[in-house]
Image (cartoon, rainbow, N blue to C red):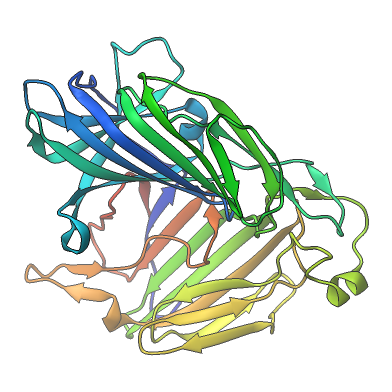
Length: 399
């Protein structure tokens, strides 16, 4: 920090998990789902579920709230839920972002489920239908089995779900597609009709499913993608009067896959990396803002020279390599730092207030972050700082 700064104001924001404000609602009885298609991507340890619903209003009154149902296990691992309304046909389609909030259903049957309400932009009149696209993202959902593997073994995981989409509405027709990283599937439960072709397992179509129908399934398959988890990331953004922003990021990284057992042979790893230690990882990619400068990468021992920076006018990419490859259960701590031009991120409004526009999140690609703390260090003389983020966070001021 510059010598002229005698005191500093720090605005700290911490994101522990997905936080919601819960409302109370009841599913309109006049809704029927004429068609539902669910696509589950299991190619990495971050699970993306794309759900397409065609919703019909078969009642006599307009309705503007559509209720989604999830199991408590899914809610515990839920990182994000998003919804769009699709209008038009084929190439002339447009999408409208919709608000989604957790809700309680006092009149729901005694089934183990949690609920979310999608608020339509315009009420759906009697006899009308609309198409919704819902995205769920889950973390820490796959279960390594066996829980421990040797260096030469591939990683196998379990995925548990239901072949039928859990819903408070009657579903006339539904289909579920599950995509695995490879064709190496140890076992999976069939709920006829079930078909498997290559890396895709198809469940359905199923006809006329009553509300709250479920049919448990599991898939046991090979997944050697990096199970990289940042247990804690502390990102400090320091604003200088001298036209620079200094960013310092402290990482605690762990391989959250099947734990490594036995001894580690570097000779075998380097000579047969793709077949020996297939589930380990040694390279990470960080996407940094354009015009980044003064980049460094180090740990407790000192500077780590195994990094490569690629820049252009739109973005910068930093490829880093830890001091040692990470196997299941192994950890690494390191620091990434870089500078940015102040004028690219700090703006002044007509009311003489200054605004810092900075991306909230982790720059490492394909990473799960369990705890994220962002500290914005303001120059001396700053007053009344406040964060503006599109989701609830804990924040506090420090002097």
